[in-house]
Amino acid sequence: MNTAQRIVCVLGMVAALAGCTGEPQPTNPQPGIATDATGNRSVTGTIKGTRVDLRMAEFDGQLALFEDEGWAWSPSLLVFLFIDEDGVPEGRTFTVTPNAEPGSGIPHVHYRWRNAGTGEIDVDSVMDGYAMTLSFGEVSAGLVPGSIEFSIPGSQTSVSGSFLASVE
Image (cartoon, rainbow, N blue to C red; front, side, top):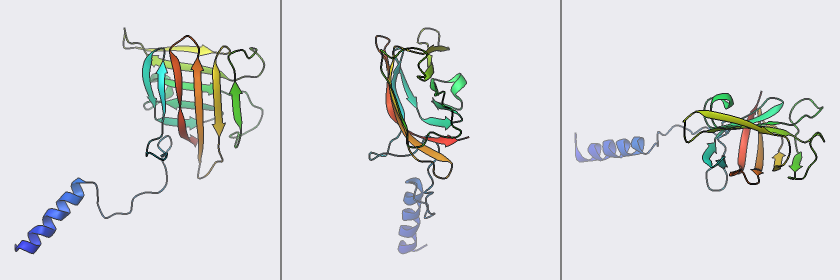
């Protein structure tokens, strides 16, 4: 092997280690993994004082934002919208204030977090006394972009960010 061949070989190894395979990179976003201007997209914050990074998202009549492979067994938010329309509420924004009356059609939110003392997943729900702004964009290729700001005053619970939910 001559010097030029060695250089090409070394450059190829460096490119492979850096993730440069020469293959076209996928342009289709993955659910929950779209990017914002900084290259990151997820819903982050705290639930009951425990740090969460909700990287996955699904919409199937309700919005599920979660950390791992499923909302039921990982830190998550599950937002029940109680809307009469089929499909995703494209282009809509839902706003809830802490003084909204229960039973007035406001979304219910179930939330899960990892208990710092036991390591187990705990669950609770809220039907009033919370603040939320939830926005949906337009569905494209089976995905819907959106953003959420959710907090429960006095409970060490506040999460916000953007998501790209798979539409089930």
